[in-house]
Structure formats: C-alpha cells, structure tokens
Image (cartoon, rainbow, N blue to C red; front, side, top):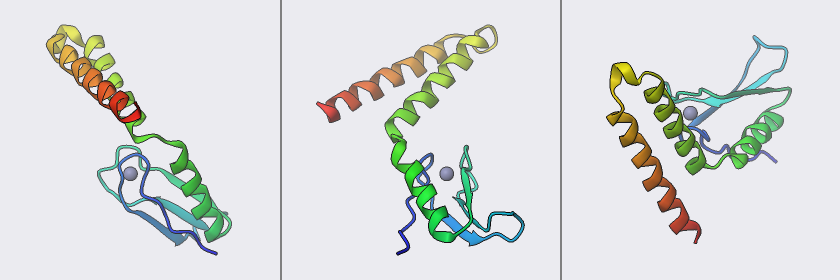
Length: 109
Ligand SMILES: [Zn+2]
C-alpha cells in the first residue's frame, strides 16, 4: 500500500514524487517549495520505498527544534559579525529564542 506523503519537515511545503530516469535509483521525493532553504530530497529504487524514506525522516524532525536551531544559528552569525551589524540585533534574536522556548515549555507542560 502506498502511504500519503508528509509535508517537508523543514518548511512545511508540499512534497513531489516522480520516477527519475536520470538516477540509478528510480524514484525521487523532495520538497517542491522553491523558497525552501533546505530543499531535501530522497532517492530510492521504488516509489513505496521513496515515500517511506521521506516520511520516516519527517517523523524524526521536531519543527519547534528546527526553529530554535535556525534562531541560534542567526544569533551566532550576528555575534560573529557584531562589529559590522552591532549586537542589538543578536540580543533581539536571543529574546526570540527565549520566547519560543518558553512557549514550547508551556505546550509540553
Ligand atoms: Zn521544504
């Protein structure tokens, strides 16, 4: 039985799947959102395997954890380039992380 495709674990975009004759493995599933920053793809021998592979990875990813990781990365960048951008922006990002984390705590508690 063919499973339904889950949305992109990184951006929530619609996935695509098609038989890809350009690769030694035949089926590709990926994110169709042209604005997706990750653009994940999987390739497997059969359509069912490709869908299972895509959906399994989606299960492992917590959207809240991805948002927090993205914010931390942004804060790191701002600290690294603080001489140019100033560290007010870094403080703003850290404040966002704290708000996001406290909202997650409320949901889990
Ligand atoms: Zn995506």
